[in-house]
Length: 138
Image (cartoon, rainbow, N blue to C red; front, side):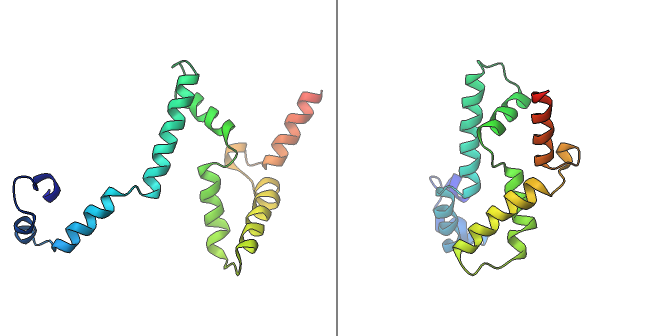
C-alpha cells in the first residue's frame, strides 16, 4: 500500500500512520526489486512451457507439454524434492566432493535401482527400462 501511494503521500507519513518502520519498508522495497530463486525458476519454466507449446503448433495441452518437458530434462522437480527429503537433509557433508558423490550414488544406486515409484506402478525405473527393452527386442 505504501509503495502504491508513494506518489500521493510522503513515505514517512504513511509509515508512521501504518506503524511500519521506514527501514522495513525500504528493506522490503529493495528485496521486492530482486528476483527470488523461486520466481526465477517459475519464469524459466514459463519460458520452457511457451517454447514447447509453440513447437507443438499451439495444439499441446498440459499433458503433452508436461511430457515434452520431462523428455527434455532428466532431472525433474519431483526428483529434486525427493533427493532433498530422503538424502540431503539427513546427512552432513564434510566436502563438496563428498556431497556430489552422495548425490550420484543416491540417484544411480538407490533412486533408479531400488526405490519403488508410485508413478511407475511401484516399480523401479531400472525395472521399467528393462521391461521396455524386452518388449522392443521381441
